Image 1 (cartoon, rainbow, N blue to C red):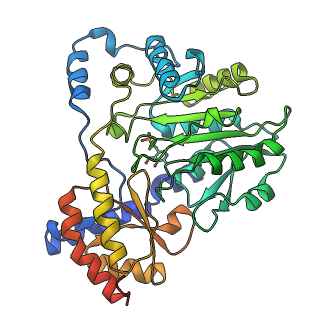
Image 2: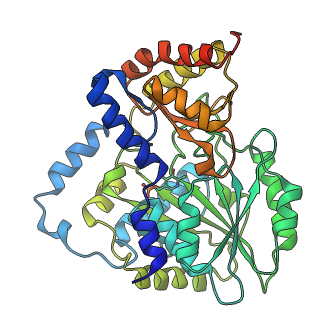
Image 3: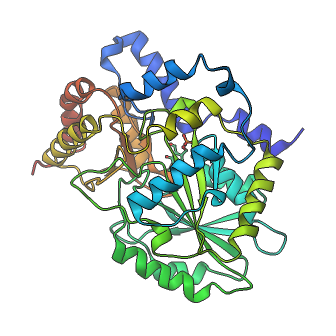
Length: 392
Ligand code: PLP
């Protein structure tokens, strides 16, 4: 048996541990006394249109059969047209590969880019921890650079980390866990640095992981990365935008401006085949292709963000205002172990930032019902008081 896989399968994740703790706490104190902000599972239902499409499609026997490995052509045509309309970017049908969510998209891309000589990827911390799992499963190495002060890109650090073995830089905007959206200007500076080190023989790809693209507040712009950097690959998912996380549907899009894009796409097809990620759910390929441009009602997330961010600030916590996704990243006023212990004793569960590669912050997932936010506030207030925080 493979020891590494055993380790991955048997070791409980921090989030899982907290989930179990929450269940035990609820048994003792009642389920209304637990405020679980650990998991990024969308709590807003999918739009009615999506449910209607599923119901209508289910009786069509053809919908349950295999599509081609890279996905149904008509579906990909619609996605290609949508990308043109929405971002004014050419993304030919033959550059789109349907996947079972962003997780599969990323795993395929990492597998496709690693070869014997070149196998390093770079990410800025804090980062989504599964990148490391997926990169290592593909035989690659994930090099981590601490983000700059305000969770922007640390360009000096990045320059030092790029080596002739570097094949990719991963960007996640809006970000899990910070809720940060990178501006066009920040991205352009980043791409200048990468482009300087990317050569014809040894291209460096930018992998844009975009499951939160539509979860955006205050009209913040989320620049379309293929419009700013040629060697780019987008990994997209409808898990969050349509609240279809359990249905596992997304895609990979290789920029037609990427070097040898045809060869790269075929390598992606090969990696998908080798990993068994062929023909994403045909029912959901159809459903998403008919729902392009729709999102779940994200006003509820906005309400939660405004309420929770405002209250936490008022109680004296240090945090950054999230512009997208559904997470608040908050500085721990005490060493994280102590802070987590006190929060848990008050029934508040969130994820310590060590999971995301930085110390002494916590991630609060506010994709919960507004009622949970409201009832949690007195507990957060008490937490601030115990930590000795002063009100604003
Ligand atoms: N990337 C990031 C940053 C995520 O937060 C997640 C899920 O939470 C994924 C990728 C995986 O998404 P999917 O459900 O589409 O596999």
